[in-house]
Image (cartoon, rainbow, N blue to C red; front, side, top):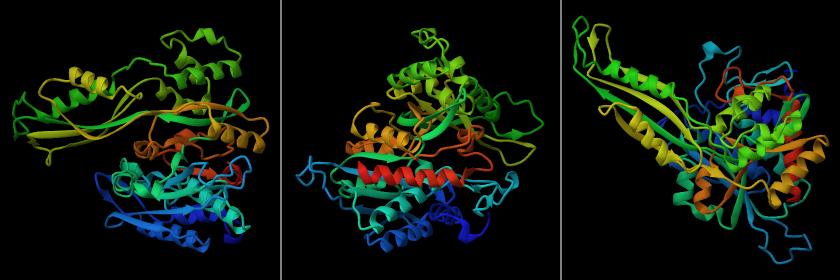
Length: 447
């Protein structure tokens, strides 16, 4: 199934977007999103919309358009009574080393009924679903029930400094009247003991990226040097990488665990007040455990090391990057504990910090998302969960916008979807893209 004519429009747009190499290396280094933003903008313009392009820096382009709602529901006759909804995706992707992949990560290849490539899961699939849902709604002469602010953003993979945070700080008027948002990493299905359940993302952990720096004595590599910057850094990195952070259950994770216990026929009381037994329960969720176990606790993962320039030269400095994800509201406490865990001469620099979010698994938008999934998959169970990573909903929260993750995908039970995020051989089933298009069209047409 490799021909252009055999692909649905959603799959074709997702494939085209994958072929734009929008790699984001972090700390301002990127191949840029401008060409992808122009491609998306052309599709929006073809629908009769007026896309606005915002460059936070050369090559770092986001595109935003507003769609006027009909306000036709007789219950809500006053225009503006229903607040606007932000529907957003990001155009950048994390790096991919072709040597590790089975296919060209930027080739957009169709194989085994799936679309392969960097961004197939995170998140050019959702970008395409948004576009084709809007085209179906507007192409038939229809309108959504409320104003939609549609945004395709730069720089999400570096915390949104050149994307969502730039727009929120410098162009907040783009989101005028909006109180809610939907985006990635929610609404996808997992297999729970032979039953299909959809994980609806109602919150996300806080983000704290730090740099560790150690200093020592520069010297010949043959000398006895106990003041070795690399050794000191290695000790600090190992300390944080091996740290076992305690379980801390939030409202969301308690709800999730109770629902999982019900689906698995387990005793909910087996989960103790301090989360005893939570890990064991989540590990029984199969591939979903890759995301879910990280929602129970802080994580401190070393991700990059930098030191030295020659085999026989002891360097005078060494650096490491640590990706810290805390539960909402625990950022300061975790940073204080990190400081206490490390030697006094290890320097700690906070590179990026952003809030955690936890929203209720209730309300009109949640009801609409749950109802939509059940209309398109009548046997669906829908469960709330806290995302271990982060999205551009963090930035939107500064404007009082409540964000959820809803990129609906009905997936094969055996597919390790969680492992695809930032992983090798990222891919998404073509029929899941079409399911997502139908579900998203339904939600945006009716909510």
